Amino acid sequence: MLRAYDKATGAEVGAVYMSAPQTGSPMTYSVDGEQYIVLATSGGGQSGRLLAYKLAE
Image: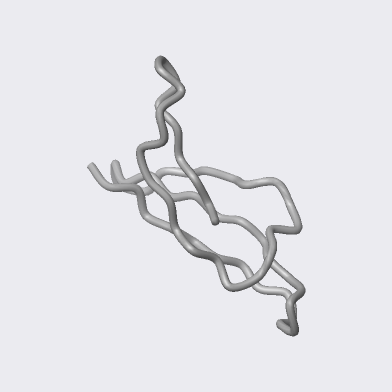
């Protein structure tokens, strides 16, 4: 699971199932005012891949 937490309170604010374990550090970037998180996954019978998630407004 990729989980998001409120920085001020520590409360979980979201979670997304990932089909393989994360194998690298997440990276964030912004395009035209939209923020994205990208991370590498591999294992569990799957070859390496990059997953990108767009953050909700």
